[in-house]
Image (tube, rainbow, N blue to C red; front, side, top):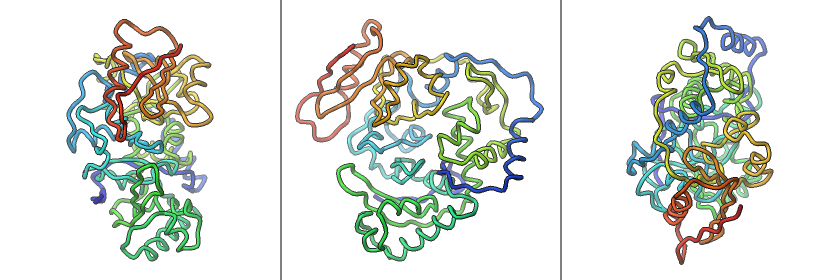
Length: 376
């Protein structure tokens, strides 16, 4: 798979907790985010916020066909692919005509992204998901750059599995992921075998600029939100997350949500109460962006404590059953069988819609039609 490196005009990264900033700088960043003079905050309901996120995330009734532009938009917050082919199912939930090989589209790329998970992103956004995770300095920055230099020298233009590279370099293959935030490491992982790694040219964008664009894009998909939640999602330390929000000064407006005060991009304020044509049903795979949340943010999407425990398990998360705008249960697949656990009775016709979604899964290697098994 070829990779066109992203550049300053793209938009996306994340950073794992190695960003190191002086305390004075961190305090100043937090102050600028929390003490700006703004107009009276807009008060938003749970339904308004979640409807906005579904519209922004492409989880609506009409699915546009696959194209470079629609793929990039579907991957605006990245497509987590840690469960084999989860990215394909996330694309299927948002686009029409997705095939088992769509994740290999030349406009897409794979990398070790947020929290070093495997991600599929738009190739032109590669720099945002990588450079935006690189610490500004300190031991984390040194470790990333040293590992990238060693990997580049060892590969010398070749491609090999991370196991082969790690063995040849005398390091644990998992340690190669530390080089990913430099923006010079691409991967191809098909799920059953070790990922293949190679090096690519580094885009001309600074980590701070990449983080700012990531924060903006995060708010476009997950807004309204806070710097703390952005840091949790992106894997960025609190000072770096606060600094990224502070760099958006002048673009943010305060809002009140059921979880408390938060920030919204001013450009999105007029759209918060727009009409939403929700899809009858969507089967979101494990780690889908719509429910890739942590802490109190989960309570907005799933208010019930017991249901949250059933969705965000301590092990591999199940998929989420999205019916007419609400998470109504979970699902897991084993070969051709999809087992759906419902939390409450579905609206009329919803079962047919769920079964149609499962039957249309664009997955390779199935020797018979998908069968949905229901449980209450």
